[in-house]
Length: 139
Image 1 (tube, one colour):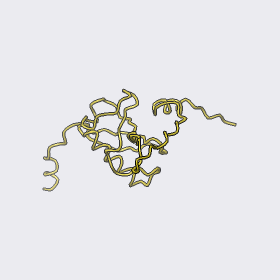
Image 2 (tube, helix red, strand yellow):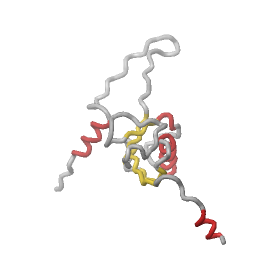
Image 3 (tube, one colour):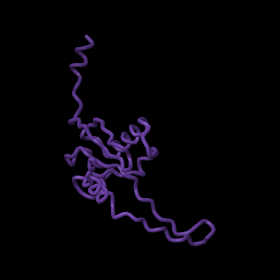
Image 4 (tube, one colour):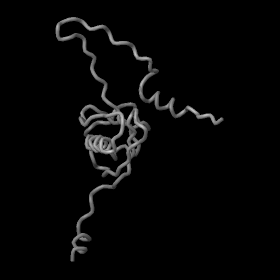
């Protein structure tokens, strides 16, 4: 009787996708299954929880509003949190922290010194493409 009830239940709407999310600075991707109709914000939340549960480094925190999800194969723009994860048709994503706004002054009214220039060659996409092109030589 119990088996008949399970068989008669309607199937979940939409297809399920195995997605892979690479966290910038982490050793490897996180993989989990989501419904293609799930919102990007919910996927970011699930990724952060999975990342913390696995004890990965660097520690990211749990505020999903501090992160953006990119699709390296599509555009250079972050995905909208209200977009569905299956709307682009891709399954590989990159999770990055949002850039922090620069502060122009301290609490006591003094102007802070300008931040030191970073020695990076560009955005995460340039770093990602460069790291893929590196070849390991065998001795």
